[in-house]
Length: 89
Length: 418
Image (tube, rainbow over all chains, first blue to last red):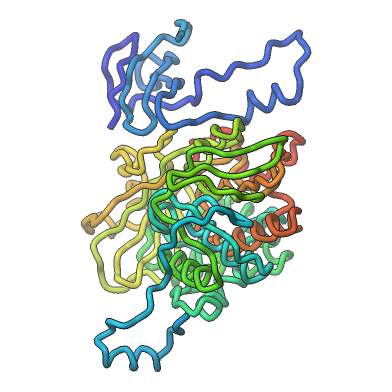
């Protein structure tokens, strides 16, 4: 079982969270020219590589906040967790 | 190639079965091939077999990083069915059902195809309506489907929970009598043996390091066992699709997720159908050895681990016990996991790509095993003729751009939601 350190609540079990997918995907900015390719990349196309993966989780059975988690997709090691609005660079 | 038959079995008994030919060779890679198939799983082996058999292309190599049949073809729950509503899925799968029925004879290898039937349980009136609609669609496409009421289901699977006060009472179900199971390893080995006998090189322990692409055309593939010149490459790597796509600077509508399965200790014959729970995601059948073979949801987050976590297994088996309470008395024998290439509409991709000579076969989600023969057959056609067959025309990559999605379950793009 994963143990995820919620930046708001501390270390909790995976059972309290639900998954939200790749956190590096950005919605195209409205008001600008948006190509079909831009929409495809936002809606469908994913890198989904082996290794470090920045992803969204929601602490559904806790504070209900969305957070970012950097996790290894092969070993499940969690390197760091961030608040949703924190810069991940 | 030595034929497998009762006479050869008797003949070899006199030499204590020590003199059988090897089922396939262990060649070193040549410098050049007409076609290289990456991935020695069910789909890759089937593709090579149909390239040789249907298109007479035998200068073919299958490159496999590990050993053949060690991925999802050896990790699935062996279910074979064609109970789809959408035409593209239904016609493709039903074409595959025909290949399944002939497979043991065709390959001279007993794949133990057992058309025992599959029942999808319904737990509400609304679900019965949906199943009636799907069943009608199936019949229009020439696939057998029977809508069963509660009593008819009870007659077939009396061990399911038919008591009064359950959370998800059984209203009935949709049955495809011609669906079933097969011995999964035999499928991989049968295809491998025949492909090898027709001249295909099966190269194991050979990892793809990179590709030689120039001027938008495939020139070769670089592997851990040397560079190979080739004009046509077929990608059949299921859960590793994203990794190889990255080496090709492609980003695909695919995420890699982990799916678990498990078997109980063997028990006497109790269940002669494949049954799926309609109020969640759980499916069960009984193997010839007596083990209850079970599976359900993805672990729910991108994963290359090839082993699962317990919370998902607990969730899946809770559904199983809700459906068939006697399962709670059984001990678990084994659990395992495999990595799935989850496409964004739940349907696969068998298509050409923007790179000339590069062909894509991926996105099989939960349903890769049953598609093995049809996938190999259509992929071989696509590679040999350099154009898609009408059976896999709907499985194009471009549909994510044009909006012609094949979303059989209507789940949208969150591949981890079941």
